[in-house]
Image: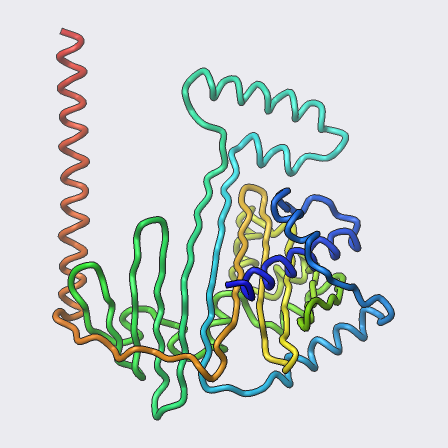
Length: 328
């Protein structure tokens, strides 16, 4: 647990360093995070040129030691800003006064009608385990969002979904388990092609802390958008990337310690952090025996959705009857 905290706070140090390096102070860092960051003894390596650091990073990535198993703890936070908040973050300094006035007016209006201008925050935590020591790749994933938990196991193409009730059997394709293709596929799906991200760097900073080496990159937004089909489509539809920061850390033996990607849009901010541990010592429990099929799961889900809609319809009808009674 202490090791994971070190990864997180050292990553914050690296992010703060590159923000200062780039002269950009719009990157969101909480006071708690800044305090944690300041407690880490980290040193920047400024003697190297930007090109030399990039070349070193690519070399470190290409020569990371091979392994058979690993555990990845993933945390994701998405912040969806209120209209007044997103407008303020995207305004220029010259328009700050008028934007502030509009924001105050919107806030007062929101308070008057009972609505909230607070940003919506979604947090998800997942633990992925990969074991390629046998004939077939085995994986396990435990996901948490709020009080909801779900678990998946795979053995080759065979997979099960473990719920708080039935255990459903199916294939990795049916369950959409893209990570079951391996760690590289998982990283590419969650963060992107690492070399492509490096090629989008506008500036880079190298830092060392307690045996760990971190590379923090501020990405060129236009290059980053052009490197990804989905980001290109989002930009074309009016939701371009405003800022993007990518950080990768390495252990003393050259293995990847952590990967972070923070992306800011007009109305949202997304952060995803991966911490790698238990190289060649990750153990996955045997795949549980299923008592239902994937097809039965689809039927169960359809029934639950139908019941949900039926409950909503009943509630709306009851509310309507109550309003009529009040009028009478």
